[in-house]
Amino acid sequence: MSKIVLGIGTSHGPMLVTTPDQWALRLPDDEQNTHPWRDRTWSYEELVEARQKEGLAQAVEPEEQKARAQRCHDAVEELARVFEDHRIDVAVIVGNDQMEIFDDRLIPAFSVLWGDEIVNAPFTEERMSKLPPGIKESVAGYIPPGGAKYEAVGELGRHIIEVAMQEGIDVASMKSLPKVETPHAYGFVYRHLMRDNPVPSVPVVLNTFYPPNQPTIGRCIEFGRMLRRAIESWPGDARVAVIASGGLTHFVIDEDLDRKFLDWMRRGDLEGLGSVPEYAFQSGTSEVKNWAPVAAVMADLKFEMTLVDYVPVYRSVAGTGNAMGFVYWTAPEQSA
Image 1: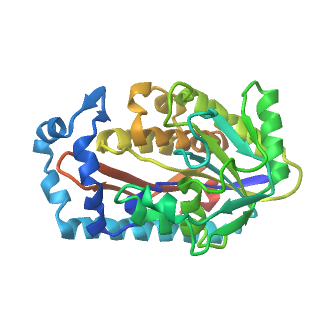
Image 2: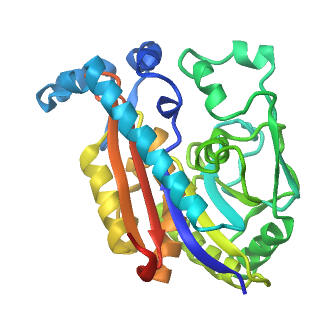
């Protein structure tokens, strides 16, 4: 049977693939939008007032932003090294879509690709022209020049779907991606963790962003336990990595909540992770749900988590930005 030998959790946001001087391009949107944070929705001005004692002015100084960007770069490089060292045959990547492959006509709660190819097509000029500032500049971080085609593992994808159905977890079956565009959650992994030389993979897509059918954190944990059983029952002797792409808290950073997430995952405390109320998983913070299935796999395997780095990357004194997390899990005898 196949063997899970590595788990990885990584953030993937645009602030990882743009320069600190470009981060301010997102500020007009920050200032105009309302933001879920803790237990309600806040205006930008309310956030500035509420967070004025946190010392965020220092966190948005240019030199401090450069230092945090470098820490993120170093952490991604370390994850790429760990991935390479483990000689992975197949990667199962848990991420989310932000209307890159679905749209509001059809948004499954869980989807699994069981085709044989993943196309990461370059954006057309028309598509680029519709992207907001700060996002347009990030596209090259997810799509290589000229685009790319990646090998998918259709047999494993189908096996995961079949096990899920047998265990009472309904999933959407994708023979190919609905649009010829790879969501940035996966493009980041292919470009940076796998250094544009990806191993065959199976994309698993969670609807973390869009009501009304967002799976609960408990359901994501349950899905992860099923995922472990499916991978380990897949015939063959493949060395498998399970990768979570997304998070941590954003677009308003909550360091206390992030540290709780990371501590629960380090301890394999799925009950703690599952205790977080659903109102916390809104906006970008919802992507923590991509980590939940991987954390469940690793807890069941009793793998040990190594925190490479946690970097709250702020772009405003309102606390907007993206908290970046970078971790990996290995069997106890392999842990650093």
